[in-house]
Amino acid sequence: MSTNNLNEDPEGTIPVSLAVQLAANWRTYLASSGQAFVAQSFLIPIIDFKNILKHNADADSVRAYIGLEDATDPTTAQLMLVPVSSGVDIVSLPAGNGNGDGGNVGNPLPSNIYDYTTVCPPTCAAQGSPLTE
Image (cartoon, rainbow, N blue to C red):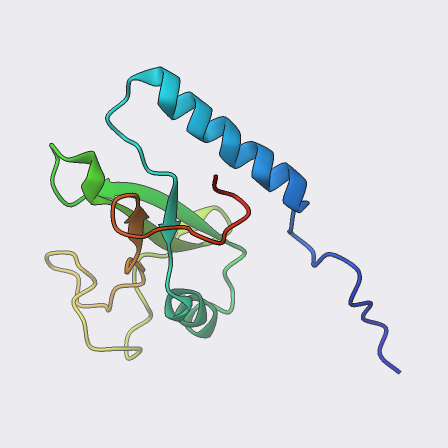
């Protein structure tokens, strides 16, 4: 008999009501701040998470960095996900674990930085999400 209670929230989650309030607080801040950065969310493909788990068994967390494709355009924001082990970013996979250059000049190791994210807005609508109005 399984001891997993389907009515219990998984470890690491927060209540939906809290998430709704946090997202609303962010939108309120954006509306009153006059900031050019208006991202309300990032759409992250599941493959990013699958590969982080597949290639980083020893990671204890993931750090998210915000970057811009165009330094003058906040609507080009990207979210980069980097596995972390003992507080250290793991930006490259071990040798023999791929065929990239690690994204660094002089670094022959494959990259371990994930970014196929899409900033919302302007790209995606969050219709149907309880975290948006």
